[in-house]
Length: 277
Length: 266
Image (cartoon, rainbow over all chains, first blue to last red; front, side, top):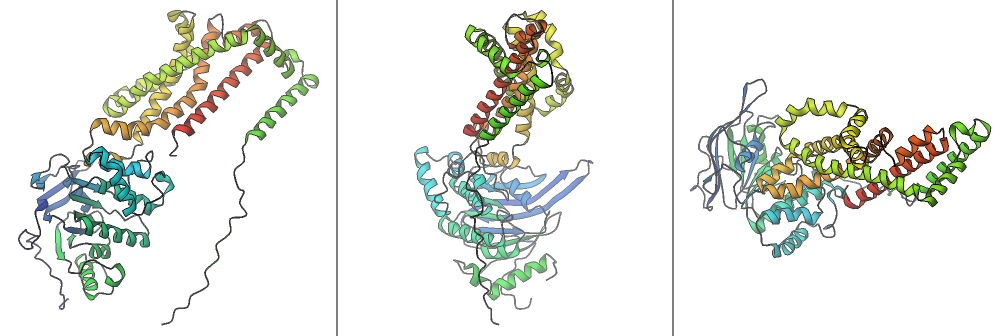
């Protein structure tokens, strides 16, 4: 630990704009509290006082033990869930209903089985408010970008899990969100597909630089992809640590794994989560 | 450390598998013919055809009925009753099913009533319906309608219940309007359930129409069966039954065909 080169920010002072040159604040959580009422009328505190901001074009990963409420903050940010206390804002506007420009991607692909690959991607284009005459061109570009060529007219049930998740990513990108909320999007995929999808996500993100909050329980995945890794505690969740990832971009998935900075950072996060190494 | 590469396992060949699943139709036809021959032989050696008729007599009768025009008259009457009842049940049942699925509190309130009516042997309503709606087409349409209505309501409710919640959350997060959600998620999701209701409903609608005809009418396949039975004419009874059976089978094929055309994504 003594030779740690990655900067570990003070836990009590979460990322504040000004500490970095990045642009406008896209998403802001201030002292967020979320608790659920259980069937036996007791309350379950899921989030207790989380504050963090995500700036324009920033790729932030959130890791933490399972059940720690990582996904819950995403649901709060896109207006699917009302927090019990604190402040949630997207682009400076408090969130009460789903805000514009925020796209969500789940672990399950949630594709419409009665729409083809192109048809599912079109959902994003249709809801993103893009003029109808531009749909085809945008869909065609995404199909190529996500290497779905030749499968435009396939039904989702004819696709592998990795391809389905690529379609789901295509739908998200067609929506043209300025903030992408990704809830363990590659969590159900096998290891190799997961690495390949991560690579694809990075190439897309490096081209378009949309802000991303990427929830995962996979520490290596978080470090490999993100600019910042925020570590949640077990329920009720607090922020344990907020690391800046100083690995050069574009990232090379394989070479990076032998980079000492990579190993050190993943080790530090393992330690934060008090997991046996 | 030295890694040695083992020989790649050779891909198992697919040559052993049959090229296509062959059509079951020849086998089905052969089976039916075999059963008919068995029936014919049994009527000569095992029982008196007075009680169970025989296929050759039935074929003769159907031919006579076809030439006289009676076959079409009775068949079209029963088809109209069952068809109208089925369509009416779909038109009424689908919106009720959607409404109840979207208003779970109302659905809970109505649950005992719906299950009570659903559990009621509705054929027992036939005398009432004849009394209320007369001996014409309308009473039989209503019989078919009550037989099938609940199939549509319950199937559509179940179809909506099984919609993936993530799909709806996704639509909400992308700020989809109500109309968009109904059009792209709700309706496509229940189409297979509606078609399944039609498939189950065809038989029930025929039962409704025939029961209505048995109780009070002057035409239709049910009436023909009833009046033949009254004259101890088993050939007539079996002729009517066979036409009804063929109708149900054809309707099933038609709906199966439509399912494959409409629900291509399954």
